Amino acid sequence: MTTDSSTARRQPGARDPDPRRWAALTVISLATLMVVLDASVVNIALPHAQRELGIADADRQWMVTAYTLAFGGLLLLGGRIADFAGRKRVFLIGLVGFAAVSVLGGLAPNGLTLFAARALQGVFAALLAPAALSLISVTFTDPRERAKAFGVYGALQGGGGAVGLILGGVLTQYADWRWCLFINTPIALVTALAAVPAIRASRAEGGRHYDIPGAVLVTGGLVALVYGFTEAAEGAGRHIGAVLALLTAAVVLLVAFVAVERRAAHPLLPLRVVRHRDRAGSLLASLLTGAGMFGMLLFLTYYLQVDLGYTPLRAGLAFLPFSGGIVAASVLGAGLVTRLGPKVPMVGGIAVAAAGMFWLATLNGSSTYLAGILGPQILTALGLGLFFLALPTIVLSSVESRDAGVASATINTTQQIGGALGPALLNTLYVAALNSALAGRRSASGQWIQAVPADSYLHGYRTAFLAAGGLFVLALVIVAVTVTRSAASTAASTAASTGASTGASTRASGTR
Image (cartoon, rainbow, N blue to C red; front, top):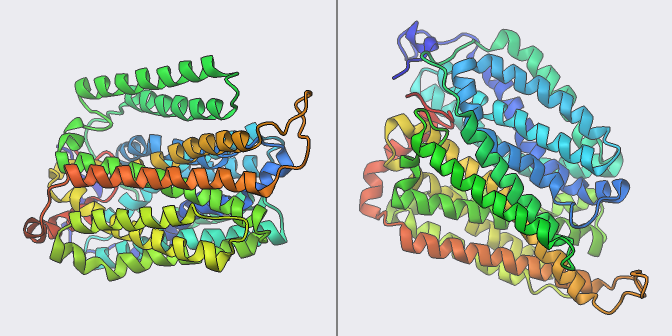
């Protein structure tokens, strides 16, 4: 068992508060907002970056996937490093590193450099995010003040995505898509300078044990899986050998990860966390819903800007109902979890989201934003908001205290990994559907006989949206079959799950 050096020096409570705690919260909040923004700000810029850098349709999802894959794959390890290497130190390293690689991405002369920079952003975000959350936990020792601090953090998490879409639209339209990356550098550097006097250093005491083999295996397996999907998107059977090799490597690496975690003295992901039936089903559903949601956002971005001809700013504003729907469902649906238990809102929420996605798959050449996008977007958002609201209750309510941090971090990890796999899988299906619709339109030299018709793109979009809806349906079935939590048992555990979520938060390693 380890103890925290910051709390060992004084009794927790409001009697000896950190006089710089509110300044520290401002700094931490700014860093958190930057990380959240970066996950969405590039979405609007993606069509412009693809056109300027000559990125193929089969590869374009890497601008999103490279970030989420590195972020999700390394988040658990980043939390453990922050706890034991020093939260303030890791926070500063994350900020400075994020600033540097954002410049690299903004200056990228080709797609490969851009993808590498996005992956490096994910690496530093995996250090920065858990360090920021842990700093809130140890800086605010009074429970009431801590609750307010986590409320600020939650508001930034909920609203940051919407702000990112609008900011991405403004920067892309009035400056250049590269500024969606450059903008991180001054924010990160100013935040780092302000953090030096504002944040108190702290770390967990005890032996420093990092599961490097586990992190390498799980990240390598996920990269191989995503790259396999990308190769498959090239089509025509030309890369079948590479596809099979990559998918086989992914399976081998992920199986090896499980084997390592079973035997590791200090595993990255203790398997006892995911062996629990309710928790395992909920986390798998979280991965699937994340995959469907991120995939939907990718193709809706292209539909708005390419097919409907929206400017980047208008496209960003067009996503506001989606963000608003998730926030509204999270606020208005809170009482449902207590009255009905978490399973009903989770199943109902996924069902509503799936209905919205299948509605979106009815797009045609005469569809407009008001008639074809707005309704499905709001319906999907409301459903996802209910699911995300109930999810932590299942995952955290019955977890052991020593695993509260890693269980909480696993929620974010599954969503980020889903966000990496979903766009890759759906883009593969999109390219296959597009090529199928265009069959017979090539000349003997392989060139298009005529311009690509709009209905061919729509066929690809509809295929991607149907696949996303299928992922939601699969998540619904998994929750319905595996989750057993009832309303009666929820009331007794809600306080415990809330405490685990906010007190331990996503301190990714937890103390052992």
